[in-house]
Image 1 (cartoon, rainbow, N blue to C red):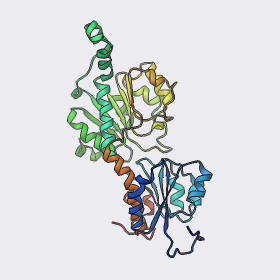
Image 2 (image 1 turned 135 degrees about the vertical axis):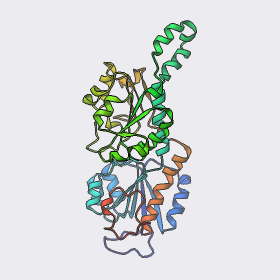
Image 3 (image 1 turned 120 degrees about the vertical axis):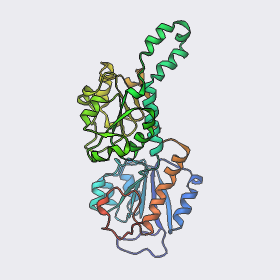
Image 4 (image 1 turned 180 degrees about the vertical axis):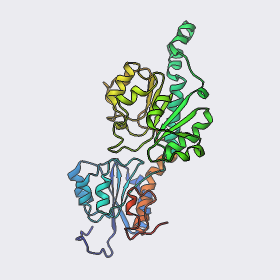
Length: 349
């Protein structure tokens, strides 16, 4: 491809779109290539191999899709031709959005591609914890049910009716609202905590919006649905676990570093909370020696809350839809740095 200096126009030269991160095959890339061809763009597949290699790969890109790399300010400042940077997930903590905004580079995320799946996974973990499902399954598999019914009941412990319990939703954005809607039929009383949400909207969603401290103190299930940023990193630590009931469970399907994992392990060991349902971890994949693996009151899934056939298909195609929108002169649907709206030669709609 012909290389052009910044400011030069490209005549009869295809626009360059770089997809960074998890590999896909050429066969899998065919629909994406066809979509980009409609706006005169070509696709370059590039594995993430560190910052220096990434800078070389994206320096002359007209658009970039991030499917597993990291984009600090040093990389963003090198992207002198880029017209949009699309994060191939809901969370965009891998991108320095502040640096992108300073360069007037729009950042987009896939804000709604998997919200149904994540909400359902959070509720699945919540129900499994509340019903002590793993203890019940173990009673069958181990033969305890057959050998000693009284011992089985003691091991399972008491299970509370959901209509007597409180579900606390931390973060009341798209996913948090879906958790409330889908979980409302279970009979829970539902609390929500979000500093950016007007408490007056609570009743229309079937929730009461309260301060985080009250939510932690009153909830039997605490489920996390916040973006990872400097304000939310390790927002759940020892002081927060100390506020929770000893019978309460923590559910995390958003980002691992939201939780101080060492403090969580300590709270579980000391019986400060009853258990947890975790799809995400501070360090992934989880190490073989992580104490969480040996805790029978913890349900673990491998960062798969997003999984469904439809969500995976949307995850593959939506980033290219966003690129096509911008290269066609429109703002992306999932514009993250909204301060740029109206500042760029792009149209709404």
